[in-house]
Image (cartoon, rainbow, N blue to C red; front, side, top):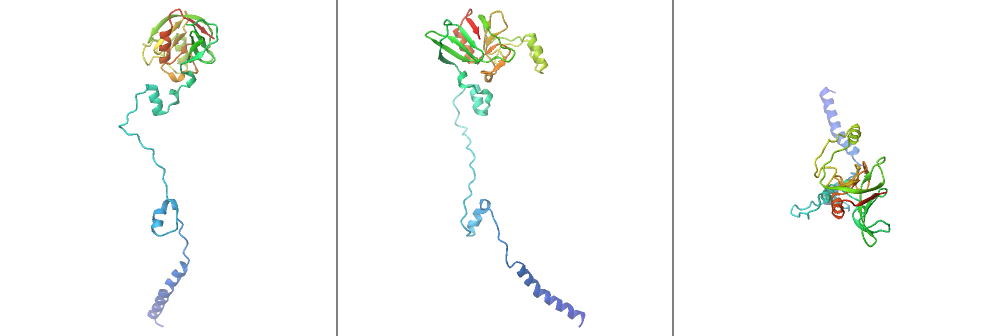
Length: 240
């Protein structure tokens, strides 16, 4: 048989056998597995079986720019916008009237250091209670004094010991700071006897209800302003 005849014979066999092999190989096609979550739309179009609809979570609606909120105090507005827990104050540290069964005369200030409350004794067995910040561990004290001076938006001259102590921690305090909203003394100050201790406001209202000061009694600015208007120089102050 000539070489040309052999080649023709092989070509014929290949043409017949290859489709057979191909058909045999794919005779039982593997199932196509699809995810209903991703392919439901086009599976349904192809007449496939029932599949559950795809439900995507809704994005929260953005508030309209034309719905302006009612004006809020700055701290509350910031807390509502950022959720900053530092700007939230526990309800028990907000001003409220309470029953008073002590023996102190009306007009006396009693500061309950362990529970971080300041009481202004009123008439008829009542007292006005405010939340306060008190001395941190090692700076607690107790005693009886009188208010010797009152000042609005006081300036601040940190004691040399405080400057040295804070510098060792990497906190550098100014030698003097004018009164104002950023001053740690806050809106009002009432000086106790001849000591360095004061009842004063703060620029950190979130610290009310904790032990955080160097011995002074710290109040929210709105609370210390309210107390300031109710007491006079000579008011007796008892710290327990």
